[in-house]
Length: 226
Length: 226
Image (cartoon, rainbow over all chains, first blue to last red):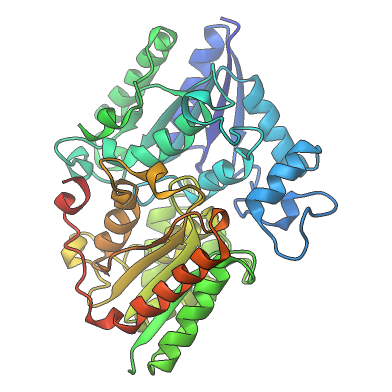
């Protein structure tokens, strides 16, 4: 109770299975007394492209545009575009970040990848020697909740999907110092029975009930590549 | 000679190191007698978001929007948006796809991920039982050429960066039946000497000279997770 949750949601259709998972999370967490904010990326028409438009006013080096350098400098002088500042404020306030999306090509949909690319800039999410366990977004938790197109077996290497989680959970979240809870994966909801879909929705509700008691994964290479 | 190459390029700045790598590839491959096409995604203001706008005319199911189903149906009836049709034509004609980009968060920049999400639709790149070695884009080669922000050591698990290549090379290219050449990686060009940068550019030119003699990687899980 009193915890703040940001759900970054990337599906076009409220009536989709992802939409149902979002609705459940908002309802269950609100019921627990959490304050829940949703960034509904498609509804916001969130911009995924990392361009010069993200910097308000002059550039640090207008001779050759370097996105990483420019957003870092802009962050320091308060010169990032309004949409980024708003997302960063949501992240800053959150105790838990939930990413809800359909897996596209073994990864996030581009609109969500663009959120990572543009919001988690140097100075805000990490800094020169401040990364991984020293990342700037410590004391926050994250959870990747996604649906797949194929069955569990299709993604399993040595019996497990975790190999494709490495760039998302380790490369992004762990890099920023954010702790990572076990992913929540609903396999092929489009290809299972209505009953099975209901079971998956119930399982999500159940997991959320005890979410705050969970321990983060250790997020070392050994977790991923054992 | 006579081979067709599509370079999908994702950097905002022509004067960048990625811009130099692009220029080298265009020059060297053209010199070899190849026909080279470049999709300069930022210059094209390529749309990364997967939305209803990708379907011209009526939807298959307007009650609940399902991007995968709608683009598949639209592909079959010739109803995909013009920008997608143009990219698919370039892919169809190419013998080799080169992806040139800076690594963003252990993966592609969102604008390039959006190219994958939107261009490689069902019916065009894969189909129900046509995936991996049976994918629809067989007899094509691909090559991921990218720069990193950090040093080689920063990305190495058990001494190697290949773990983060899994979603891109296996999850996307291999899934579509496209064979994959060894990635070409320039580590931290922003943090090395001018001399070292020149060496990296020369190495790319040299590799391109004998590129057509290379054998694809075997693209099995064993290659990635040995």
